[in-house]
Length: 187
Image (cartoon, rainbow, N blue to C red; front, side, top):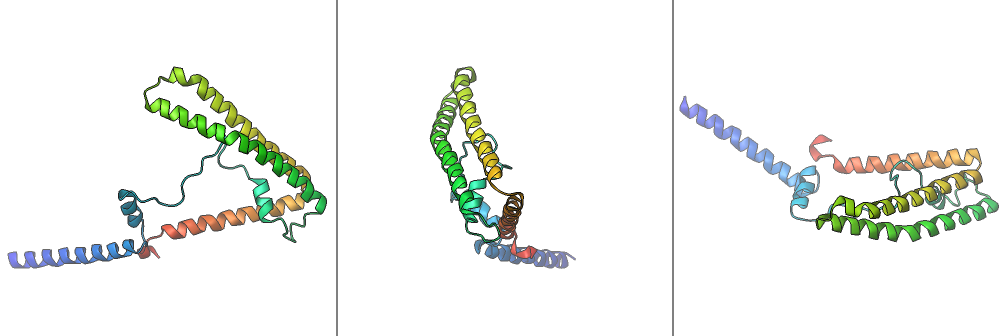
């Protein structure tokens, strides 16, 4: 009886070890989430460095001029030379404003974080936080004006086409990220 129990236990243990070893090989090949966790523990960077945004609203608002630049000569979008000229003005104004605000936002954010970590009281940081909120609000208003001005230049069918194309690109990008997260055993 004890021999049977010992043999059964050893068999089960060896099966577990073989399975764990096989999973380890998959993960070393980058085929499951455990590999990412291992890399994180070793201090390796995962993916791109996070971009910092100067806007109050970081998700949900389209970046119209960015989408237009990607589709500038798309025959289905069919931008006229007059539209292109107007859209370039919108883009230059928007980028000029945001490029001026972003360094201020980033510097002030860093300053507040460092002061907080150093033990500065919240009340002492209030004026800087209010200034940061003001700068981020200004950048967000610039973004909203860009969307508004771009929509005013485009015909409804052009806008619909552009937004549909953006949705498709977003879905493909999201599907690509999800595909990279699947473990080899979950195919």
